[in-house]
Length: 203
Ligand code: SAH
Image 1 (cartoon, rainbow, N blue to C red):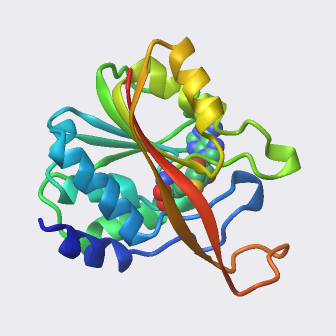
Image 2: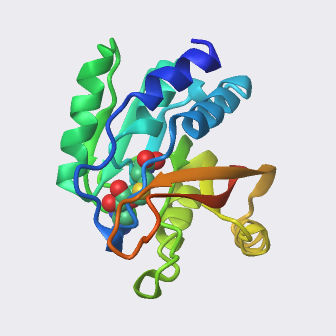
């Protein structure tokens, strides 16, 4: 599927019905998800099984299927988000739909190794949530041959150190503008742009 078509399909998918602030539930916009999935096809990373850590309403997992992945697992601890992910999946009429599992990313409920990880972890931007991305990164280092992840702007120094300590290499790093619509009470504007960064890491 062409990147522009992928973006159209992913942009139409539903986001969180009632996002939970403490879980930092922001859905990845269709254009950003399409960009990552497209990059993954260029590097043949979707030839391996794919695991979406904290899959939320499923945009990254579903994007990888549309981009050609044949075996995709989405792990998410919020049951309500998984209900939306399944609704999104039905809308796409896929022949090889993802498997959805409710669980915590720090201990994946299924044995997986040598996979391609995709994830948009909580940024840890709130006081109660500092370092919320760490379990995601640890699991990516543990089970991933390669990972694609989205982080808040200014993460490069930390990520370079973390990836180095875990024997990995950052092969791509680029900036993104991440549009979020008003979701939580503490957001005063209806819409705002978050400056984010995306990484491809070989573990
Ligand atoms: N991947 C989705 C959602 C990103 S928001 C997308 O790209 O649109 C981050 C998601 O991680 C939320 O759905 C949140 O519920 C989930 N999450 C946060 N901590 C988690 C944990 N420890 N285990 C599993 N899921 C978690």
